[in-house]
Length: 484
Image 1 (cartoon, rainbow, N blue to C red):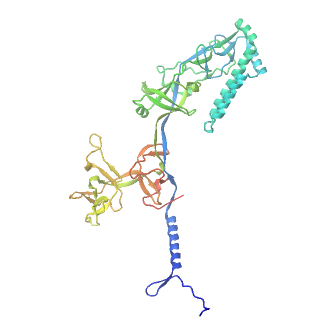
Image 2 (image 1 turned 180 degrees about the vertical axis):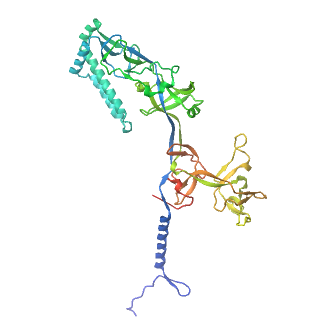
């Protein structure tokens, strides 16, 4: 009939025997199965944190506290009286630079203080120096080096003191000339070039010849500031001058570090106080049963002119390679077999072993070829400690589920048999790139408390950008992994 609508045929699959199955149902069942499978995989997989392997560096260093030796000259007062300083602490002074004055009567000292208070006007040159000091501090400031703020404060106070006191001295020049003529006002100038320091500690004349174990006792160190008093007695210290840029650091040396440094001449160190580094010539000297490392430096002394003890890192070297967390490192047990038993299957071209599996009754099956991977070959050592050139003595580490301890392996074309009884462990990490755990070997180059540097060329090892399990001990070979 012309007006009758045609009925759409349903997508039905007809099976022999009359069974019918709708295509939509098949698709629905497939999707449902897919979702259930992935949900099951997610629920049964181990959820761990992944770590991406990257190139990195670990610095090999050791911390020590060193004792500073310098060429130091203490200058004492020839008169008693009021004391005033004109040059800031730990500053370079040329020969003839005015450092301080002693006023026997105290009148000039009082006038100096009055002039400094009433005429506290800085010259253009003074202001330029202070501006440069502030600019350099602001430009180089870092939050990680906040300690430099205290150095800046000290430098700024010293520069202000220097500028004001010198200005005040010039302002009352007529009084000072009169007092000098009457030999009651005495100026002390640097007798030779050097770095001025306003403290003493009784160790100014210390050398390697006079050094003792007690010299390293910081609790007994007596450091006396010379700027805390306004007066001085005849014979008391006024200042000291460090007259050479060359200086030394002495470190008590342990046996391990002594062995590391044997045969060398130059080493790099880092100063913990300001994180600067320097190269130093060194010698090792033994005295009274104690080994000492004597570091000789030729610059940078002025930065530590106010210190007798200093904390340093001895930088032995830097190791670069693949950097992985120590928590990722674990071990895996491998079976050991003689390397000479490995053979190649003619049909497949694969490398493996001829295995005779042990039966429950203690007998063995016929030998069958089982592909096996040589994860690591221990080439052993000969009687002289060198790598053994005889392949018959090499042992190979394998991990193959079809080969168990108790099985035997046969040497191709021979009646020789070897029973697999020995096992050993190798260090490695678990690669999880494909969603399941695969053990990868590592060759350690250097390790500290948190990270290990490993070689990037290890066979069956890790490569850059691999994802590994952060907690290696919680993972097993072949385990399904879900990262988060």
